[in-house]
Length: 367
Image (cartoon, rainbow, N blue to C red; front, side):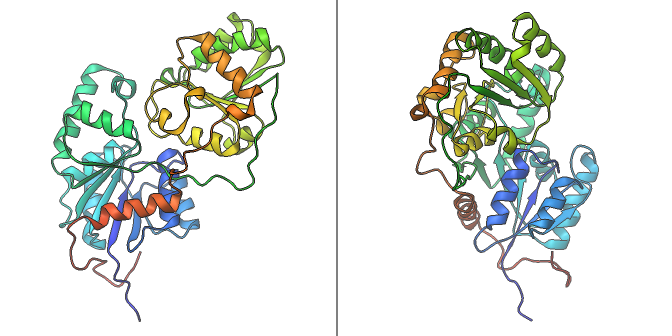
């Protein structure tokens, strides 16, 4: 029998829902990291099923906020003792902190940052929580061997918020546009789509205010506010006060692919985005895009797609332009990585580490 001698990279995720980090994981590991065996550690959930279907080895165990800190440390330590990975690659803050607190049997620590804002109150909600998380990250960075960010803006926020001068490798989320995507035709009645959580940081109220101006000039326009969240009731009420309830739908969760197929313009006016898959998908689908000029958005979109959420007339004009002038719609920069390119870039980070001569499970069971 030929033994698999490739070193193991253990990807530790504290969640198993099918959100952005899950997609990043599936894309990278389905493409495959050259010369490495990747194994995912995450709690039971939909991601486990998707990984298994894709043929990616996965350990489903008590790991993450629902399991608690002590159990998560025990799980990670046991998994490392069993698999003997050359490195542990963490995603999201909880996993970063758990890995910093866990003896890893000599494994290196790699971390990818997906969700930090220039103003970390966006995600932390209060100054005391922000301070606690900032100090926690500053402490865990002292144990990190390599850091990855999904955009230049993400790397800048890491340096500013965590006061680190550590080297950060920028690897955007890989994207492979569908070969059959075509531009939507020009329209004077744009079908606008918001595809996000109904939460304050998504600034959907600003979109509603801008859309009310769109309707004045383009009475046939329609807005779909897809997603769930605590702002559902207040957003419906605002649509009523603006007199556009008959032009706005709130369908809750929708299938993103189907929603993109039925729209002309995607609008995303978030306070911050790092490397938005919604924007990547919109560009790939050939639809118009209007987004706030924050975070990694300008790294994905040209200037004509960016609008200030505090200037409703500017947003409304951008929506009308993106709907009515197909030539103004965005294309990804030619250098944007595919999922395979993203995986290869991650592999280059791994290859730059000092790693053990051999690694692998202590027993005969291979993941």
